[in-house]
Structures are given as structure tokens and as C-alpha cells.
Amino acid sequence: MAPRPRKKGNHGLPPNLYPNGRAYRYRRPDTGTWHGMGTNKQEAIKAAKILNAELAAPGDLVAGVLGTQCTMGQFLDSYEADVLPHRDLAKATLDLYAVRIRQIRAALGEAPVDQITIRHVARFLDGLTARASNQARALLVDVFAHAIAKGLCQDNPAAATMARIEKKQRKRHTVEGIAAIRAKAEPWLQNAIDLALVTAQRREDILNMKFEDVRDGALYVVQSKTKRHTDAGWLRLPLTPALQEIIARCRDNIASPYLIHRKPDRKVKKDGHWTKVDNRYLTRAFKAARDDAKCYAHLSEEEMPGFHELRATSLHLYKKAGKDGQAIAGHASGKMTRNYEADHDDVVWKEAIADLDISKIRG
Image 1 (cartoon, one colour):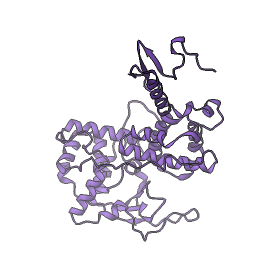
Image 2 (tube, one colour; image 1 turned 60 degrees about the vertical axis):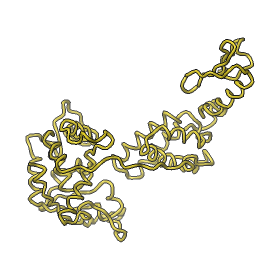
Image 3 (cartoon, rainbow, N blue to C red; image 1 turned 90 degrees about the horizontal axis):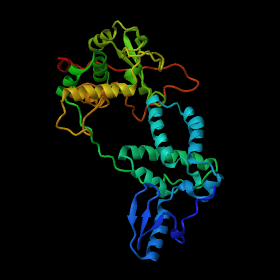
Image 4 (cartoon, helix red, strand yellow; image 1 turned 30 degrees about the vertical axis):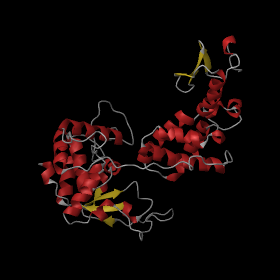
């Protein structure tokens, strides 16, 4: 469809530049805001042409209009369907990718892949926080690498951008702070907090723990983030009194296969059972209890530690108590080899002792 012809009074002016009495004004195509351009017609035209070149969306280019190239949105469909499923990524990682892909679609989805420039990518990344920007950049670098391999473009504009420096903002939990949060938490969240402290496991691994994983006098944990890479991802935690007491508390009147579970308002089957708590709900519930406890009122919202920081606190407390936090965390050394191979099903479990004393936190 041909563009709408300009009015007689605008004849000879580039797109987005309009007369305003004796002066001229420019309407930004991306925001719709108006900007005065002075009374000199030639200077206004020159500035408008520069602004049009800077602000034009990549999808507005001729080839994009003709539909002769694959758009970023179309290629992301292929990337999600053909690339990501074969990487055996943890659900939490896939959820994060889904968020970043939605952001990329919104900013660059209509643009032909081979017409996205470094400036387009940089402008998109600049609108995100440092952490989100670096995550989106890493994903875009991989997306463009696959696009190059398919012959859809020749360059990787994302790789030419600079990663941003991420300043660690979240502070570490204090024993007093965790105790105050735990006091405001529902029983299932208290169990999750205690498991996080005693086992030093990640949020997703805690939520994936099942009663059937308790056998032969131990809790068996397959760490979702590392199980495909090192022996440290397969842990056998003997049932110490501290661990056994938490597991006993997890057995309540709600029939659930998961240690950490709750009865939702509506039965919606997800990830295997309707009682399962998902990552986002746990994060929100912990934040609500933390805000209710008002234990970190002196910190900004960005500095307040969340559920994720319980793992770091646990490892710190293990070290302070003179115990081996490295083993229970599942941190791998350079000498560790893969425990799981495509033709090898005999798992060797790495044993670690989960016996942190959290009596001061429980009260």
C-alpha cells in the first residue's frame, strides 16, 4: 500500500516535519512527541532527514516492507522450536529465555534479520537494566549466530555491543532477618526456608524435591543446573536430625508428591501436580513475608535479599561453623568429569552432610 500523500502545505518537506506558522516542528515517529525545529526551512529539513534515519525502525526499510527477508519474529519462532528444545535446559532457564524473547520480539520482531544493525540492538539493550541487558544480549548473540549459519544474515550485531557492568545490589540475609521473615511465613514457606538453609540448594531444586527422593536413609537431589555437566549435580544427603525433622514437617494433611507444596485456591495441574509451588509464586510469597516482617526497612527495594539469597547465606553459615559447604552446594572442581552420558545410566552419587544448626532462626 502506498503511503498517504502529504498535504499541500507540507509539500517538499521530509516525513515527520511539519510547518508551524513561520517555524517548523518535528514529530518523532517512535514516541509521537513534537519538537520545535526553528524557522530556517533548509536547516529543519536537514535535521529531519537525520532524525528519520536515526529513528526509523528497521522493519520500515524497503526490503522489510516487500517481505523478502525473514523477520526476527519469524526466526525466533524457529529458534524456540528447533534450537532450545535440544539443549536440555532447566525450566527456570527456559522461563527466563521466554521473558527475554518476548522483549526481543516487542522491540525487533518486525525487522528483517539482515537489516538489524548494532544501533538497533544497542538501543533495545539500553532500555533494560544491566542484568536484563546482559541476559538479552547473550541470547541475541546466540540467535544471530544461528541466523548466520542459516544464511539469513552476514553479521552478528549483538556480538558487537558491549556487556554492561552489573553492580551487585542485593545484600546478604542476616540471621535476625530470616527469623523475622520465617515468623511471618505460612507453614509451607517455613519448610521451604528451612530446606534452603539446611541443604543449600537452589530454589528450583528445592521445589522439585519429592517424598520418593527420600530413601535408604538419605535425600537424593539431582541439581537441575549442573546435573548434565559434573558429578557434583548428583547429591546424596544422609538424613541428619536437622534434615529429617524438616521432612517430617513437610508431611501434612495435603496429599502431594512434593516436599514443598500448598493447597491453591483452584486445582490447576502444572508440572505434574496441582499442589506444586512454582518458582514465581515462591518468590512472591517470600517477598510478601519479608515486607510484612519489615526486617530490612533500611535497605532499598533493589538491595533487599530474596529467597535466592538464602543459598548464599546457608553457605556462609556452613563456612562459619567450620563445615564443608562446597560439597553440599554441588560446586564442581576442574577435575570432575561428567557423571551422566548418553550411554551411561549408572549414577555415582556424591555424599554431603546437611546438618546446619538453624535453631536460632526457627526460634
